[in-house]
Length: 356
Ligand SMILES: *Cc1c(COP(=O)(O)O)cnc(C)c1O
View 1 (tube, rainbow, N blue to C red):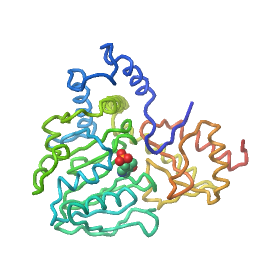
View 2: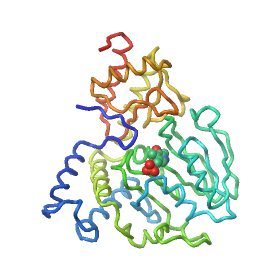
View 3: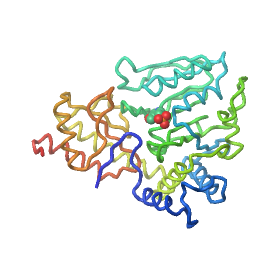
View 4: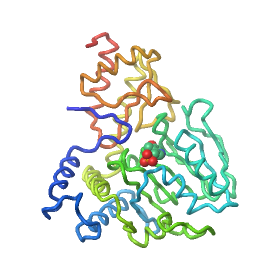
């Protein structure tokens, strides 16, 4: 039994993996593999429709919000969003909360003006900025709701009159929110929603078609909406496994139910960190992420020893990102609370000297 704390690609529910494995050999009793199946068939069209419908239902989206499954990962959205929303003379506002927002800034500058309204860079992104103003003429305001590398998360979505755009790659479907407040949400599937290779985009169709530039066909959200996310061959297998994961989430009781469990998992691990004299949390307490928990020991040799010790217990993926060091335990939807219990017990046992 492994305990998978990987940051991404990351843990998927066991039953989803079993269903996906079965469909690789025989998809829907067709006698063919999902990997060798036409995307224009009735069977696969039904998969795409169910996936889009499940997102609408789980996120309680209104009729203006369209759901797309696109190629290219979240990194493609760093450029596709401004290409579709920002004219050359217009300005977008953005909160710089880490590497991913920095990349969104770099790409947006190719299309229009960028106003970085706040940044936590000077403290290696260990907190979420609170004191900032969004200019009235900003076309939209972009935030990264959860900062995967540093372990910070916006607990409150900032009040603002401008249009809201969010990179939700690492906390999508993990907590309740008024998703209709956002005009555009994007998320690479591989953290909390499915395997790598597909990108979820939720977009309010009323904001599209306002820029003057010509948009390449495959980059224009309107074309994907018109074709029900089947403009070209979609990443069939990644969409299929995402659909299975969405079904699984619905069966768990949806976002409300999973949020409760996510809260309990994070509370358990942060408690262990706060009670320890060996481990220290790296971010401001009020901004702690419930998805990616970062902590250090301050001594690389003992850190290595701890990784070694936990490996023998089946704990995988807790090594921190190189820019933070130490440890990062990702507690995505599919991770059971029992895995967090194994980790916290290992932390206590290690601290008490019961090393392997
Ligand atoms: C992982 C991640 C990305 C990059 O996703 P890709 O699919 O690799 O392009 C972007 N933003 C956030 C918040 C992430 O966690």
